[in-house]
Image (cartoon, rainbow, N blue to C red; front, side, top):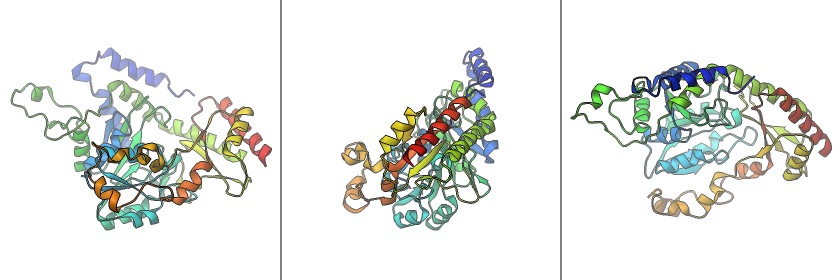
Length: 400
């Protein structure tokens, strides 16, 4: 099986054959949005240039702005917290569950203040977050929840597909993701007003676009009195070329995800009955989509992370990745760059009163992050997958 196959090429050629004609310049994007919405059982899907722009648009669509706080996890790709800064708001970090590595609802509740406006739980590594309690917290405090499902496509939480439960959900089509068009993203929602807001924010604030319409009409723009821009927005629209590839990938989604699940099972077998390497816990009634396969070194096993990785590669394994550095310990937070001109005005208040970005803020995440190994699951060549899982088994035996 090829990750990019004949269907993607067929759709790309259709776009090129149309010569980017204005009359057909949103056909693939329209088809992609419709297909994606149907797949996830929602009314609206809006395509974007990438999966960070989606989060930015979702926050603005929910009314998040200067002085507002958004609760996020500290263990994930930094785009989640950076999108909050893009919205001129403040990321507030809640700690993670030590077994699932996803944001802990009990700590979310502790971090809610009168300034809190939204929560962005991340479905980490392909495992949905514990969204049920999060939605209850949101209802109690009148908060908007945006699922960051960049790493989770066709994951399930208690028989409900990830992305269909929160007020909005954001997906990424970046090169490593389940669906890829090189770059791209999608927001889905059941709420028309949110979808309208998202569309306009990602389309320069055009008056003539809405939840299901991504292009202004020719008749409108040829009127010299036409008021084009009714709100402030960015040009975050997805290109037709990317849409063509993403559409084909969406139509092939089940097989693409199933391959990753198969490879994750192979990794599981390689570390079966090994007490000092712990896979990410998959609770009952959850389904993991395995964007990547993750192992955690146990606290009581004296194995150096770098030695383990070195031996794994020596035994024929492919690259193994570390988890991202805890977001608030990244230099952009630690060097006070956020307090300079152009970043949230409310940091003046924030520095004095609220959460400080320092070691000890989220102790569970800080203790777990250096012990995580992320193994690739996007092998289309199963021979490479077998080599990597065999290398993992040999590495475990070496250190056991």
